[in-house]
Length: 415
Ligand SMILES: [Ca+2]
Ligand SMILES: [Ca+2]
Ligand SMILES: [Ca+2]
Image (cartoon, rainbow, N blue to C red):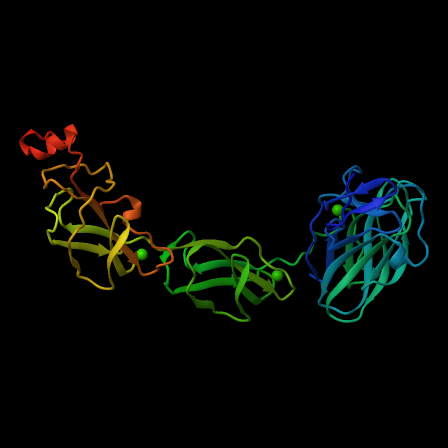
């Protein structure tokens, strides 16, 4: 069992009513001295006295998506303290005329004990309205006073349960009488917004300053405000066009929304783009010595590297041997003289090359690490397993076949 309340739960005896069935509706505009509203297009739906208004489709002949029925239909009549005791439907209406209006309602009564309800404006002065017939859709009205042009709240309250309310018409022309289904609904149309910059799905290097801009219009009014939001947080608000700003987005993928508000309070929905802000890692290559060579212990080597960043610049380059920092450079050339220590070290098996050395042989490997200009996100090229990691090694397993190979390069077959 469901109820058309806005997100509230209601307990009626042992029956728990949950979940809204209809969204809150925006304001309806006066057009040609008429405001026409489907009863199911309420702004709020508030239960009271263990009763509620429910959108129903079980009574053929309704207009729009449904008609609203006061339920449960257990013979209850509410006749005092209407505003607090009666289940209430409220609607928002924007009047361009003030003065007397006829408040017409199209409804349906199943019996003489289910044929009445109350109407009102701005929560005031409920007036009972009754249908003259049963088991037919019928228009009935009462006169109301609209004191000022602009937004007003329109009220429907339950009087007798079981009654159906299908449509509402407020007519400035007091001689106007709706017939049949009545006029078309006169809703305020929401504004229309599109991004003009940047393109949806575009990608930029971190630190780039973009033009963030949108175009907005309202088909039946004017735009009074435009907000830019990034990942749900407000970036900026504009009262007037141009809706444009300079924007330096942070690293990451962001959803950017542009939300316009029109002069009648309606907003657009679902105008959003995705922008990716990236930082590619630097690329580094050891240029000296060549990969895999062996040297006598004590040899001074030239250790050098080239490094570049595909979408920025390299701000630091480190040389490491066995994970130990040998030197750091802020600028090129990335060059140092290096005398590796002797010893046996673990070598990446991807880079095997064994040649003769001296009896106590060293087995060394080294990395070049380059850091991009966004050090918080740059990856070292070495960490990616790229070409910046090289090896120079010779085993000193004197008794092993490998070492025997190593001392006689002519017999070396490689691996
Ligand atoms: Ca309806
Ligand atoms: Ca509008
Ligand atoms: Ca980079």
